[in-house]
Length: 80
Length: 173
Image (cartoon, rainbow over all chains, first blue to last red; front, side):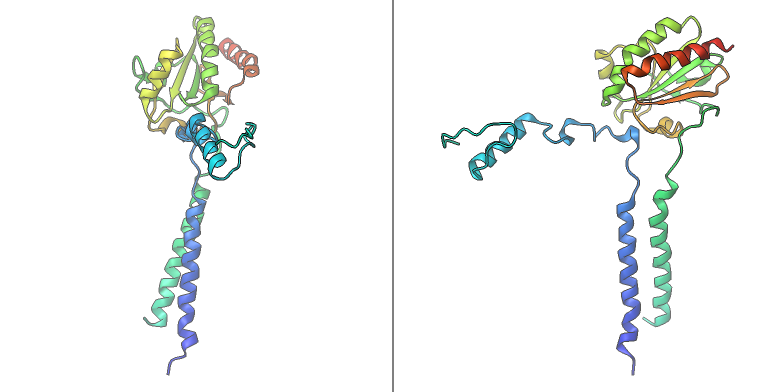
């Protein structure tokens, strides 16, 4: 009769090794200095689009009752 | 599956994963050394094809730039002034554009005029061979075709030093 613990050991090793191999995906080389055209676009910055940012703030203010904190003072009139 | 074949598979996976983990290490490279021969440049240009070979015996200032790079834009008036001032003494400026889409470069040039040679490298082969580490990067090449100085980035206060180096390089015949 086969020993069940012994036959499972290679499977665990294989799973562990595959996990290590998957980590390699995190270690890939970053883009070179001349390849950063897309990263330099305004859309890639925090608050790159003023209109979009205003809209997001409006949603926060009206849905979550959270206004201010972005350099904009709260109204206080209760009309969002 | 037998234990033996499991072991074989395990060995293969280990080798494979080690290879993947070590890949980034091989991509690390140093900047182009001062004193080394400047790699050849053969590229299409905005007006005419650009070849570094055509500028033999001249001091060449090679600048890598892109339309999306702010400091590059700031360096254009400086390079225009250099080209005007030192052309008679044998200075040639080659500005290699590295935009992935060369149309971005031509659109940029309608707003920011340039009186020097513009080469277009949308594939990024030239900056790779020059081991460009920052944008913009400039390489001063002497009359003998060797790299005299490498400069990374561009700030207003860098200008006197860059100009001094060029003036010195022009004195060497």
